Each structure stands twice: as C-alpha cells, then as structure tokens.
Length: 312
Image 1 (spheres, rainbow, N blue to C red):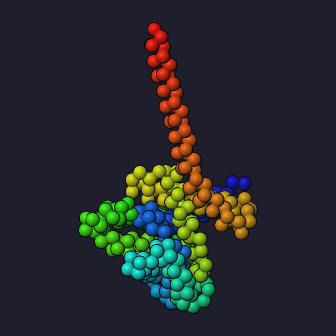
Image 2: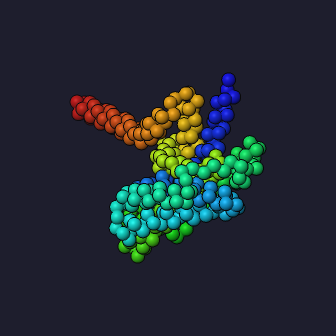
Image 3: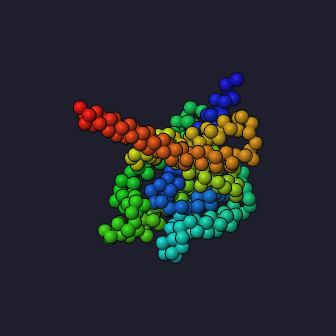
C-alpha cells in the first residue's frame, strides 16, 4: 500500500534536487537583486534545447551541459542589458526576452520536441542504481549551492547583494550597479538553463513548452523554503531554497497520487504560492495583535496599581 507513495516521493525528490538549481537562480533575481525576471520560462527551455541538440549530434554530455549553462548566461545578459543600457523596465525586459527565446529555442531544436532516450547522458549509468543516483543528485545540488554561497561572499557578490538592498547607496560609493545587475541576471539564468539541461537529460526529452510556469515553480520553492526554514543568512537562505524545491515537488507528486486532474496542477501551484505569501503576513498580524494585547494588559495592570497606591 505504501510502496507506490514512497516511489512517488522518491521520484519527486530526484526531480526536486534538479529543480533546486533552477530555484537558486530565481533566488538571485527575486530575493537578492529584487529584479522581476521572467526570462526564466525561456532560458529553462534554452538549456534543455542546447543540451538535447548537442547530445543527439554526438557531443559529450558534459560539454552539452556546459554549453547549456553558457546559453543561459547569454540570455540573462541580454535581459540585463535591455534593462540597464536600453532603459527598459525590468519586468518588460524579461517578458521581451522570454518571447524572443521561444523562437530562438525552436530554431535551436528545429522542431517542437526532441527525444533522446537512447543517447548517452549524464544520468545514463547512475540512474540504474537508486542509491548512487540519489547521492549524485544531492551532491550536485549542494555543490551548486555552496558555489553560489561562495560567489555571494566575493567582492562582486557583495556588490550584487548591496545593489538589491540599496542601489542608490552603492552607486554613491562608486560601484557600477549596471554591471552587477547584468552579472546577477546572467548567473541566475545560467543556473536556470543548467537545471533545464539536467531535467532534459533526466527525462530523455526536451519540449518547447517545458519552461512554461518555471518562474512560478521557482518562486514557490523560494517562498516555501523561507517560510519553513527561515532565511537569516545567505547560507541558510540558499539551504531553504534547496529544501523548498524538494518540498514543492513532493506536494506536486502527492497531488498527482491523489488522482487530481492534471489540468488543475497550475491552479494548485498558484494556490500554494498564494498561501506561502499570505501566511507570513497572517503570522505577523497575529504576533502584533498578541503583543498589543500584552501591552494593553501591562498598561491596565500599571494603571490599576497606580490607582490603588493613590487611594492609600
């Protein structure tokens, strides 16, 4: 009875660990840069498209994965340049690049989808052993997490964080916020494309619509992770994002196991994000109400003791 559920949770964890890399990319723009980047939906597919076409043409999977990461960097750089040099609104820059990438991805693939189940990929051998497969996926996700932590503690990483906190202040110190913005959006979409390349190899297929809704999934992972595990430091925040991605995919898998209509999954995703966004506000309101009641009780007690003292 429990076996199918355990199998679903195991599969969701495998996928969640790969999606965690995408969520780390979204974390850079959403939390660190405070940049509403919708390029994600396009760059995720770009990563899968580049990896798929190179693998089917006989290139080494490692080279194909590296090329996918580079393609994501380029897509992110274009979005960043549209915003910083073209002076286009950040949200609109992401939308324009996402639209452009749809056609670019079709050009790369040559057709709407590519199946390469029988081709050698990064997961061809390790996926045959469940224990090894899990260990490798955990190691890969946390390796990227620790690399990102290290990057965010470098000079340019600190400038990136400062740009998101207060761009005007960091400019007053002589920093070029245009460069930090372009770098941040590039790295973000590089990680997103890397995740797309790994998902494509994990599933053995790339589809032109595989990136649809990725920005929502990434935001859900970030928000769920922060709500459950907190985000006081960079180390803890990125750790929360990784676990948030896993939790999100498990929730998704459980919903499917409960035989919910697959057409409703986007609605379920939206509801999960809404709840995760509203919950902290409700918690703060309840906490403030409790503090207000406590303060009112203390003032009433103080007034009561003062009146008794005056009577005496």
